[in-house]
Every structure is written in structure tokens, then in C-alpha cells.
Image 1 (cartoon, one colour):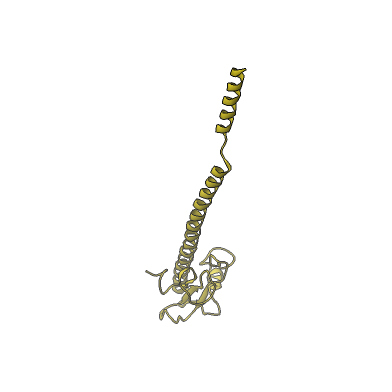
Image 2: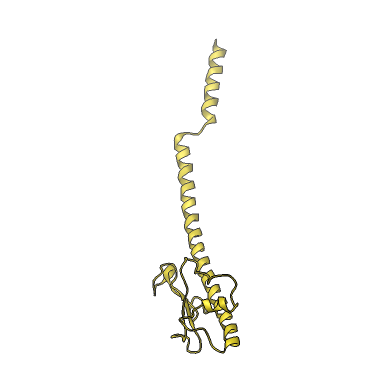
Amino acid sequence: MLREKSLKKSEKRRLNEKGMTLLEIMVVITIIGIVMSIVGVAVMKQLEKSKKDAACLQIRNFEEALDHYKLEKGTYPSTEEGLAALIQAGKLKGKAVPKDPWGRDYIYIYPGVNNQDGPDIMSYGADGREGGTGDGEDLTNWGPPCVK
């Protein structure tokens, strides 16, 4: 009988030692939540940087295509013709002018206000409004961050 009691106590102790307490589980979940929030913020910042880099790359591609257009036609397309003239002339692939990474049209002006000898090309960035800083800064072919 004494032996049975000691077996039962040792079994109970062993069963209690196998599981985690509610407090331990809550601590682990809290730590995981903190780590996920830190990683999430870093990923979102990197995603926004990637969108800016993609917009700058597209602006440089437009400039190159516009230079080829000018060599062939003698002038850049007018503001009214816009970047669509590059598609019609076969200088850009696709059926439509690509949109910026935020889904909006690039702005094209010729003759340029900021580029005396060429066109101005810009995206209003993440906020979709002229001006701004940080994530909302405008991306242009005449100044940072696209021109370094």
C-alpha cells in the first residue's frame, strides 16, 4: 500500500512536470508577438524602399527610351503625347505605359521645367501628392533619390 501511494505520487509529479503552465505559455506567446512586430516593421520599411527603387529604375528606363525616341524623331514627345508615344514608336514593350509601384501614372512634361534640355518625369510616391518627405517623397529624373 505504501508502495502504491509512492507510485501514485511519483506519477502525479511526473505528469505535472510534463506540461507547461499557463504563465509559461503566455510568456512565450508574448515574446513571439514582440519578435513578429519588430520583423514586420523591418519588412514594411524594406518593401517601401523596394518600391522607391523600382520607381527610380522605371524613370531611368523611360529616360533611355526617350533618348532613343529623340534620336529617331529629332525631338522628345510633347506633354500631350506623353509616355504613350514611346509605346506607339516601339521604344517600350507592352500595350500600355507602366504605372508606378503605387498604381498611379507617371507624370511627363516636355519641355521640362527642371530639365532644361529634356523632359521632366516623376512619380508622386507613396502618398500620391506633390511634395513630401520620407515615404511620401516625390521620385524624379532631376533630383534625389533617383539622381545621385
